[in-house]
Amino acid sequence: MDGTIQAAAYALKYGVAFTIAGGTHHAGHDFGEGFCLMNDQATAAGYLLQQKLANRILIIDLDVHQGNGTAHIFEGHQQVFTFSMHGEKNYPFIKQRSHLDIGLAENITDKEYLEILDENLRDLFERIRPDLVFYQAGVDILGTDKLGKLNLSPATCARRDELVLGLCHQQHIPVQVSMGGGYSPQIKDIVNAHCQTFKIAIDLYNL
Ligand SMILES: [Zn+2]
Image (cartoon, rainbow, N blue to C red):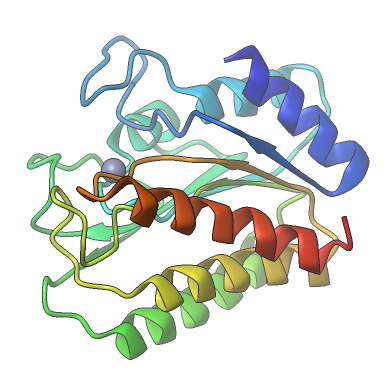
């Protein structure tokens, strides 16, 4: 929890920061579920607002599961905008309402996924003009994932990260990244996809 708060502070200072854990987006105000006890990015967002370190926050949740806890915490909130793009047929089966939800069909193609994401991200950055982004970069969108019902490639997962981090970098918006889910039977598929997210940030930000 404290790691994500600190990562958010590092993001404000250095532009980008990662938490090597977190993305516990199924925890709400007064409940924990789906392997999530407390919501790290929601807590960090609340902390930044309370400390007046940020005024408009965008939480981008691209894990295959809807960020129902995050949505529950910030439903109707004026300063924290929640965006979840997830498998419609995936857990949680009763969805909460994010500011923007996109529930994807199981048979969506890599190309369609990236087009939908690109269009919505550009629109959101334009409309919200966040002064900080939290990115939940779950890799359970992969076709190899045993819980996720989408069938996307590692290249698409990497391109997804490039779209998010590229916009943050281009628009000078600090971004904190939490890992989120990943349940491919071969551990290397999970590790490679998470490492890809780090590599993209390293290249973009010349770290
Ligand atoms: Zn997940």
